[in-house]
View 1 (cartoon, rainbow, N blue to C red):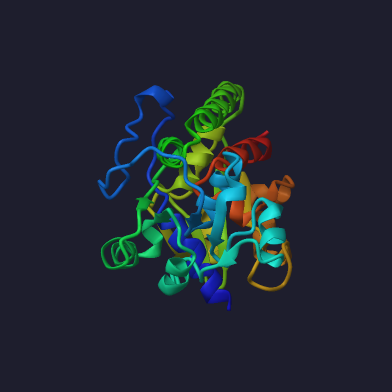
View 2 (cartoon, rainbow, N blue to C red):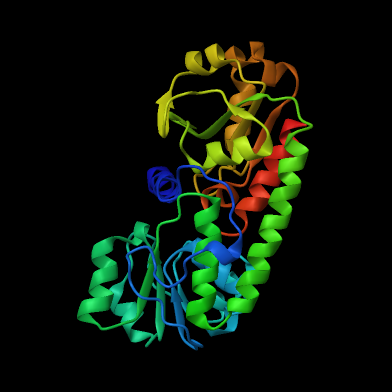
Length: 302
């Protein structure tokens, strides 16, 4: 079970990597999705979401009452769980294990997917079942903003999408100003401990750390397995661990492991009480809530 959860987190993370700065909403091209498929503007009444991040965006745009299908991992906002329990929203499988027949049975007028669902699944829905599918592969905050605007256009909620992106950019500008006041600290982000997975450069988590005013303690690219000795050698000023949701042992599983490991007692983060937990969903999903994660990381750096 833990490997299924970890592989989902890593898959979401890999779909959302590299770094860039936010752009003005007027500069985004919303005429095509990330597969170069035309985006047709219109009001959609039966929407299927194939990713937790997409579901979060749809509800934030005020289209939750038009969502008829989501994945088993879609759990935010809490209203989603309530609607699934009541049978008002159907579950269409997992993130990378979409039940195509279930999607088709819901008779959607739009399906919104990500590359993590698999290009084969996307093309099957389009070509075999003639469904209108738009898909996204966000790699950074700017991509998330463009994704939001494009979804807004495709479902008839563009004004709401613009307001959501404007709010994100306003908050990011504040983060940028606050970052100038913060002494730069070395940060290690740990996804899991058995084996120990950490975030390196050219990842969306590295972007979040950088925007918040910190510096990644590891210089390699992507997500890699490291040893306890590697972390001790990096001697981070701040350690951020994912919540243990879905992997057993409680939300503070990784925190307890790190604090309880005697060999970590000598590093700056432990000595100065700078070991923190961050919601794994918050930091791993390319939705508007990534700004919440960046703001939270900035608080950790103060």
